[in-house]
Length: 347
Image 1 (tube, one colour):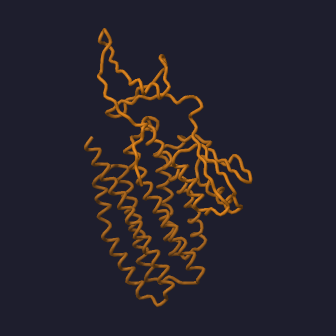
Image 2 (tube, helix red, strand yellow; image 1 turned 90 degrees about the vertical axis):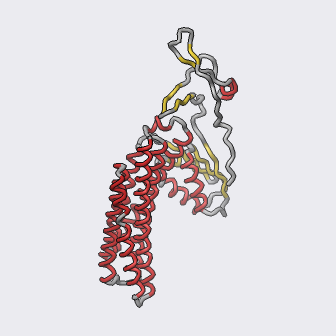
Image 3 (cartoon, rainbow, N blue to C red; image 1 turned 135 degrees about the horizontal axis):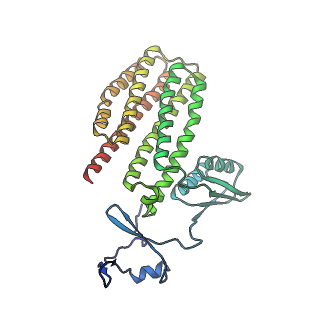
């Protein structure tokens, strides 16, 4: 990917002056900036102190606060690609998304299901060759910390219930866990949209009441939790597949699986807590749990090799892999906590 310089970001060095009485400091602005921003003498601008810097904020001209984008599709366009295009533009921060072209019935249904996953997005207009999507809700109705809390609570709940559904061979419970994943996805996509907005706006730290570095770390943790939820879904889907194929999980495997799932849940809980508290000792303690979990994973792998039914071994192999992935994601959160704590010490 080619990265080019953005002409919107320029820098000028100016000497700080004072008024005749010396009681007020002042600085001049480049004439080119004033002309490009269409500012007039007497207009108000805002100076904001953020950390160790000062930003100059210029109000958006009337009528230019809404951003829009178009997606051109054909009846032969892959519906998954259309869905990805909508999500990418949602995260990028567009207020209006217009879809134009020959829209098939299947594509239209997929567009609707995609929009349902996006907090604040609504379909306002539909024609045979046109769909209008607009963001209606206040983007700041949920704070960054609230979004992370909701993602954490849902992901941890799914990680608790999915292994239990497998142990109980409860296909109905597994189905409910799969449905809960949509909620995590909605919160994570909305958090991603907020993150991109903070990157575009130098004053985003003031609006969000959170530094961009802290926001980035929280988004990183949320991404790991979203992946944890995905693997809880994998375990739940495996439970349903085992029931459909009438395959019984051996008690010997269940015993080790119960230990490993409980251990990885403890690791995740401690890792998240270490990030919230920026506690180095807790983060180190969480990472110290990983070797014992790896031993349990190896033990389950050995038990899979002794299974005579290849279909059963295949399904349970997916479960073992998911527990291993969750271990890795939890360890990633602990490492984010260590990095964030070290940065705090450096400030």
